Image (cartoon, rainbow, N blue to C red):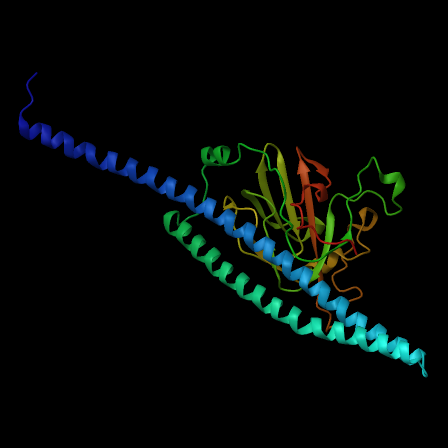
Length: 307
């Protein structure tokens, strides 16, 4: 069969849009992969600086407590000896000299975290430009979740208010089995995704209230409850450390009295006055539906202290 030159040109022209589209798709996927890698680096650096900020604030609190104790010690000793007075003055001098240094370090760290937040948002915006819907297809989900999580990012800054208690260890805990952990934190602070994954549920869930569930691959899931606002949608891809919502008064249902024996009782306003800025975030980590203790999975240096 003989095909003339115009026919060949026409056939090539027909093929070009498909090839161009395929090349564009591959290029977009490469850009998404590169952006995700950059996001992971930014998130990791943000988490490190947040840890430094928390350490700085703990040191500042220790210094202030030390000054108070020093004053109490002086009040208990109305007529101190010359040596005691000298020792007291030295303690005050050292502690007072630390305050401006810690404050300067705090402001420096805040500047760094602000810059990283801007970078984070810029990268997310670029990612959104490439994939405006931010939705994942079933095939994409399987590809994205082909590996199990190796660690967890602590979802919010705070302290442990309640620990995980398995059925096996229940006999050693007076409050009974507890399927997750409760972190005491502050109102209206960001909540971060503990894992890379796909959001599979956003909405009310029994006594949990507003709930976010993220599928992390290989049968692993995380559940976050007690948020006031959720920023993500079902089928959206999220990265570990990416903001997914904000804490709120809804988390107060998980106060220290929340346990397996009174799960149906809301604790939203119990023991909280109008000026109280505290709230709670509830966090579950499961493998094939079975609750497991998330604490050993937390990235080194990111888990909150025990209260």
